[in-house]
Amino acid sequence: MKIENTKAQMRKGVLEFCILGILAAREAYPSDIIEELKEAKLIVVEGTLYPLLTRLKNAGLLSYRWEESTSGPPRKYYSLTETGRVFLAELEKTWKELSTAVNKTTKTSN
Image (cartoon, rainbow, N blue to C red; front, top):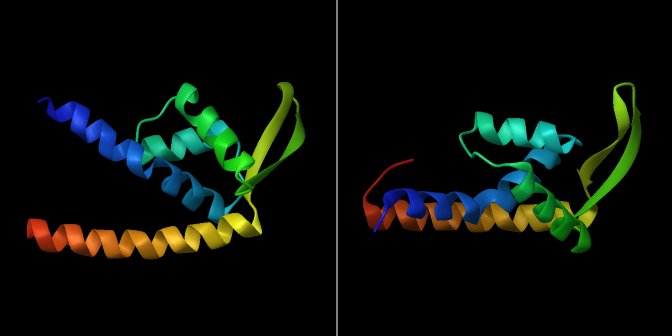
C-alpha cells in the first residue's frame, strides 16, 4: 500500500469543506481558491476544482457573478449562498466531532 495514495484520498475527502470555508470569508475567483489551497498544502489543480465548484453550485451552496477583466475574458467570482452557510456550519460541527474522535482513537492531540 502506498502512503501517497492514502494521503491524497484524505485531502480529497476534505476539499469541499475547505472550499466552502474559503468562500465563507469572501467571494473568490477560482485561481484565488487554488492559491489558498496550495498555501495550505492542499494541492489542487483546475481540473479538480471546477467540477467541485459546479457540483456545489448545482446543489445550491454557491452562487457566482461575472466581472469584466482588463486582462482577458470576464471572470466568474464564487460566493456562498445562505444554504451554503447553513451547510458549512453543519460541516464544521461534524468536523469537530470527527477530529475529536480521530484524535482520541489515534492518541494524537490537536
